[in-house]
Length: 638
Image (cartoon, rainbow, N blue to C red; front, side, top):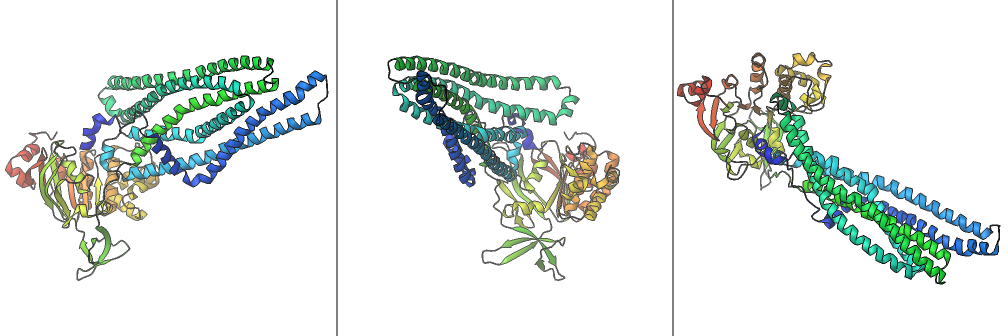
């Protein structure tokens, strides 16, 4: 585990700054709308389809007044027992209206499914692309569980809102406006009663909804913490079991889960009591309206048909109001999740202010370089001067540290005034206690972190002037923690250079002494690896990582505990292959095993971020200092 990862492990469980509530609803809504701008004509169709669907229901209800007052009531008074043609015509018209409403409902729901999936596709693309551009520091201080929660929880919640809730919300809103308008037309007296009751209901919704929303936001935050903790514990199962920490892990999980339970309980208590109370209030509204309508009908102010239609509108009005109150929680939760997603998308990408690139070149007998568009095995740093001329510097791997001081956090210095040089083809080794700063040096070479004080140069060019992608193409790394991707063995080795042929992949595997065990796999080089190569031993996984570095054919090689998981016998078998791999390359070796660094041209002994000894093996033994103590077993590296 890298130093920044170790230092961040404590606060990492809190994840990125989770929002207790959406900080700016308006901006979030506008931003989602921008993702949907290409769907504007479909959204127009959806809007009109919703209007048609809502109006169909409203018109269908209003037709009851005609049916009752103009047909049924006169028929009952006259004693007629036959249905007239006009009556059948009205009923048929109502049926057509409802059919149109059903078709419109299907249309806007179907269209919104497509709109929402395309919108979320764009958001996922932007999120993933931004994550690929973020600096290593972001991942060192953010749990994987919190990042995965963006995809599994926040985006999925937004999907439900876009595909269902938004259309339901608009449908309910249009229905409320349309029904309220019709109620005024039919009876302004009864409408006053309804308005008073609805006002009281809205006050209740505001109170309960506000309580519920705040707890839902907290629930999302706690859910991210729980997910992060679960992922961390899944990854560390071997360590947990080795140290018998199951009970401690369960205790910590219970504490996190309890916080999630508390907030989820509070959120859902308020959310769940809202609907039953609203339904009962709607019954009260219906009862008051029925009594008042009956009185007005008896006094002759309203017809029977008008009262019945108004009561039906009252029932119809209650349902969308209940829907709106219920949908508000979903909308707020989705917007909070969207803000979390946009928060990552808005993170500052890794800064790359370099302008020098690395290009393949041909070198003639006069040592003149010519840029080509095919691989030659030789590269040059290409710099475009202000006067329009191009300057080429042969990439050889001459690395110089000049007074480098660095810390991952302010006031916590990890490296202090580090100065060293590595000539092309040299092997430079770093030894020292854990946390002495060995891995940090390699993190600075490839600009995972930038140097605030001092400078690092390659072939006389300060690395902050080189484009990061080109800088990193000039070096390859074998890390202590090997990561293998889902795919074949050949694809995993070829990851070091995607244009490598099968023959080159096999040659790299032989160089790393991995060819023998690969051929003994079920399908050889075509064996599919899954779950980070869990079917392989740690040593075999590192051999593949060494082969992946070998095929990259870079002038600079970094080996960070590359043989730490390989037994002594295997280490001896691959030592010659490692020597061939490092031949002609500037190699930086970090190792605890002194047998690995013995042949290095220069060995740097680090303690507390400072180089306290330097020289080759024999020179350091003669000094009888810290390296001598390490070699004699008088001092433990850790």
